[in-house]
Amino acid sequence: MGIVLAELGAHARIVKDPALISPSGGVESLPVGLSPSTALTLPTLAAFLWGCLGEPARLRAERERSILENHPWTDPRQVLAEVNGQPITRGEYYQRVLRKFGTRTVLSGILKDELFQQEARRGGITVPPEEVEARSSEMMADEIARAGGEAELREIYRPEGLTLSDVRRDYARDLESHLLAGKVTRAMRSIDEAALRRHYNQTYSRTRYRVRHIAYVYPLRGMPPEELERLKTLAREKALRTVKRVREGADFAQTARQESEDQSRETGGDIGYVSEDTPMDPSMKNTVFRLEPGEVSEPVENNLYGAYHVVQVTEIVPHQSYAEAEERMRKELTEREPDLDEIREALNVLRARASIQVLDALLEEPLEAGRAGEE
Image 1: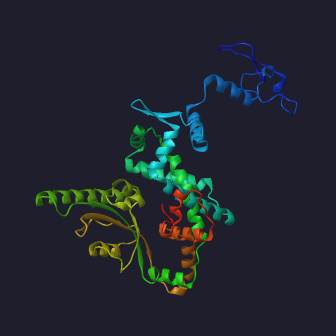
Image 2: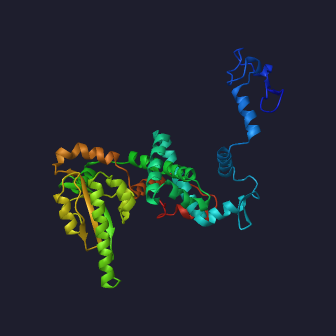
Image 3: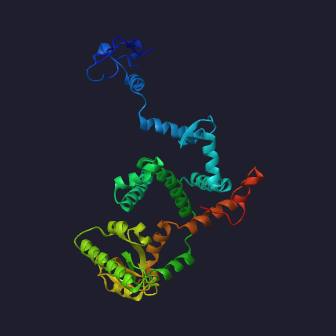
């Protein structure tokens, strides 16, 4: 034994033992208040305190989660949770996961991940932990903004027994796989003359305006006229308040995440580039073309979809000739984030190259044509 307890209580002493001498022949560093005659190695002290105080709850939860994920064959009768006194065992947990998501679907996802991981190893492609952490932090910030604050989000997940750390961890796990697939897909791109020409026709062949907006919707039908008018007026009043706030310094993207009533709130109101041939309500498009970068519009009425929009142009990209834009286009095509269609195409290429055998006949369906790239 490395330690001998000579006395217990508030003034417990840890008596020096030969086993505590460091390999160099000296005594290990001492905690404050311990003399060389009572020296204790830090690992031993940690073990002693661990035994006395008990394993911290957070570390215990991490250890139990690791066992659950990495050793699924351990004691299927172990009770993981109870609902109104009804136990849910480890074995039932795994059965219900497969039933919920589908055995074939789970296997298809595993095969997809394995193909991308093998291609990444061949190409020396990795996802740094800092990148995963940064992206998961962005996603958590968006969730917190949508919920109205960290305390509010914590309350949303509390009934499910989840902490915000659990949510962040799940984001990180999903992100690592997604980011790796994206990097492999980018590495597989072929940027030839045809790809550059297509990109040019969609971009630099015309002047483009990078636009973001905050939308406040109102119904166009289905209610008495006076109620429709009341809700339309309410939407305009909210838009006017937002114009004032943003012009006084409120962050546009953050405000969009908190208030916009359409799907663009997920991207801070960003709707990409707008040009002459972009399908858009004429009143909104005319407003876009009049704005200078950074300028915020008055509320724009959109009776086509039923909304008032607060619009901001963040960038104006003028028309350029093909020769002028070629280098920039090549860089954009190389670095841009792949969409799901491109990732699916890359996965189909990897599947076609690979030799995949599923030894259980019941699980062969995920390999059939047309299922590649299932998310």
